[in-house]
Image (tube, rainbow, N blue to C red; front, side):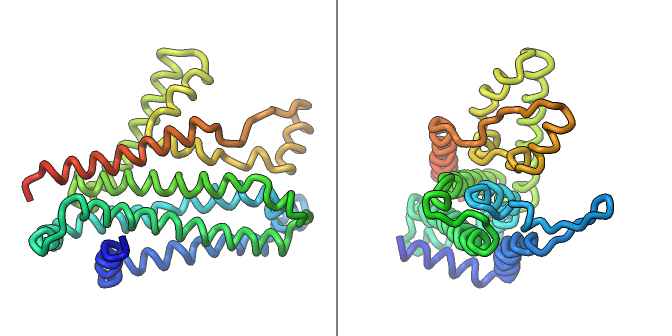
Length: 279
């Protein structure tokens, strides 16, 4: 494993564009901390986001992982380019000539995907702890440990999405087209949702359950939007409508299973494509 990871990291480190994207990604993750100093002025009243509870435990685990997941596309570009460059520069063929099997080659990419997901998860975890202990009104261990499942969900979400990007890079073999393929897939899932919602079913809950089996949607379901969970939003909602909607923000066990299935599927299908393809 260490040998295969070293091979991939050397390739990434020798590519200037990949280094820039990786550094940019982690720098942008750090910008979440800047939300603590953001001030808004509404109806002549100044208020700071950090004072409104967005960094309170345990809400911070949900909020930070959701925001950080939005930035995953920076590493997605790195992964797609990492695979496309193998074909462009002929390093894939050279690796195979040097004795690396196709199974080891896919394993090296998979380990890199897991390393990216793990590094990002650790970074978000540490940053959330620092922000939480700096601004949270509740720092008891029992409260801090609540909702830590969002960290696990974040790791699985990133690993599954990066595996999908790996598949796109192997299947398409060109960075720009592979990224376009990912975008088109995302649009296709949205169109399917619309057709099911407006042409097939009238029940949104049924549509949500069906869409939960689709790749990108299953990854999205691991961390649901946190904004309507925010106390300020709930107070405004209750004030305007008199009714507070009840929504489940956690992750069901089967949602983990579905995402893990797609993670394994995309890695396996990538290997099958590489195995059958004439290089």
